[in-house]
Image (cartoon, rainbow, N blue to C red; front, side, top):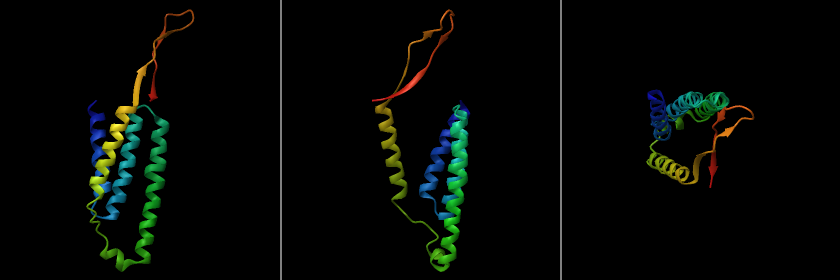
Length: 136
């Protein structure tokens, strides 16, 4: 339970750092770390397929492509990139918070997890309980 809370807090902090990071390179590195922590969260939730996909695509391939793009930007216009190395966007952090709140409120209103009634197996007393997501 404590590990789940730490993963959730780490994901929120890392997501904020990606949006509000001071430099572009730091934003890319934090994005890769966010992908790895997200893969750990999926594994912890019992979804190994999503954990592997997040680690391979989210952290691995996307991180490599972002690093490649960053390197090409440095090669093409090094003097401009040295001057514009810092990101001074005042809009990124509030926009990230606003979008997160909108998504959370939508999910809270439209997603409802209702357990189905337990069904008895044929000829046995074993009961199975399943739950499913219903989107209204």
